[in-house]
Amino acid sequence: MASLLLSDDQRDYIVHGVREDFRNDGRSCKDYRNFELLTGLITNANASARVKLGGTDILVGVKAELGEPDPARPNEGRLHFQVECSALASPEFQRRSGEELGGYLAQLMSRAYQHDGCVDLSALCVSPGQRCWVLHIDGLVTEWGGNVIDCLSFAVRAALQQTKLPRVVASGEGDELEIEVSQEMSLLEKKNLPIYITVSQVGDSCLVVDTSLEEGACAGCRVMVAVNDDKHLCGFVKEGRGGISAALLNDALLLAQDVSSDVRLTLGSMLDTSVNMDVT
Image (cartoon, rainbow, N blue to C red; front, top):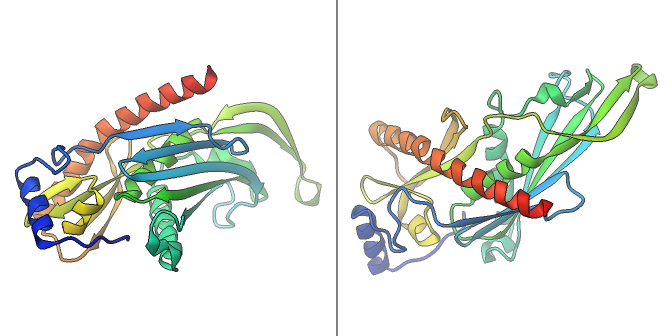
């Protein structure tokens, strides 16, 4: 992750504010920074979304193509995540760390979407064992201002909510398989799309969401929690220095579930507004 050096006085100021539930930008410990959502920016994609969260800016595009299903799951389609960190987002990404981080972020998204019920993969099957829809979900981190995985998950969710696929009809088998692609489009069948809520431990036992770069530099550890629409956990990953007690981890998971509801409502409202603007 991108790092930031702070003086002892700066750290003390940030940690003290968190303890008082009044962060240096005026937010409480449960508040996200203001974010923006734009859609329809990539004309040759099936769907796209751009989310700006504080100083973090991420663009996601979804491109569907016909491919072969996984032999172990012949009756389902596939999701493929890929994330690139632009060298302009942080000087650190000019080296190999940007490529490694992109792979790590893609892995986190893939884990969250392995949870049952996110996307109806069976609906992506065109001909069992032969052809299916493969959704390539590509993210580009253009600016880095902290809390990148949450921002990425918001953009992925918004893009998938608008994804449309052409109706297809398959006939024949093997070498005689024929696929007719219609001009008629339908929305991707999905439900319970997860988002990540990252909860960081700042100080001894203070939990905060959506840390800025400065706050992230003061965090001992963070827990990245994937939560779906039903507020069920789709998994979590702990990273950073130091450990976290079982009681504090439980508090972090509960906080993520609680905060996720407001985030989803805000995203839904912003998506409706953005789509209406695209139509007009």
